[in-house]
Image (cartoon, rainbow, N blue to C red; front, side):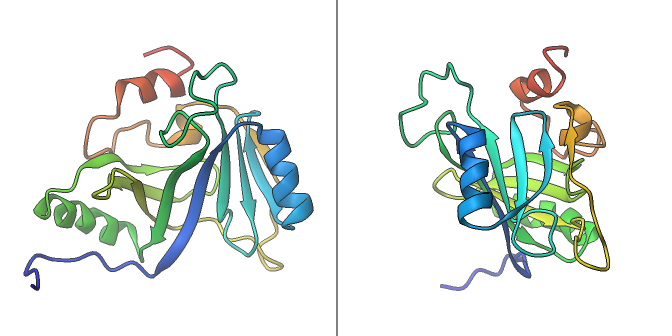
Length: 185
């Protein structure tokens, strides 16, 4: 059975974000064992790593040490995948994706926004199993022609979304606003 509704047209799988129990131990594993390079940190809560020229193809996010679910699987408050992403050509294509997702009654979770680390635009939605899928574009490229020095970003709304949720097509979850604003809403 073929759908007559419009479809998205991603170019390739982009990056994966994992929630981890010990970010220092995990960062050491992915750099020392797998050979990835650190691009940036957000405080001591998130690290962006790369194997190629994209600013990141793997990001690690620290689960709160007091999380009651730290050893429980498989929910977002436990170690595991937070989201995976697909590259699209442009912001305009991402804006068109909103209409496609709505035509298919797909839940949009967050975005359109633009991250600080990586400078990529993002739009996140749910697949049928509740996994977060992200479309992204315009990620910072790091290679011999485009050198980059890693830095530590403050955990704030600006590091999460340079537009401060103003371009979101759905209201941001209240917990996200509180978390990204240091408890200030």
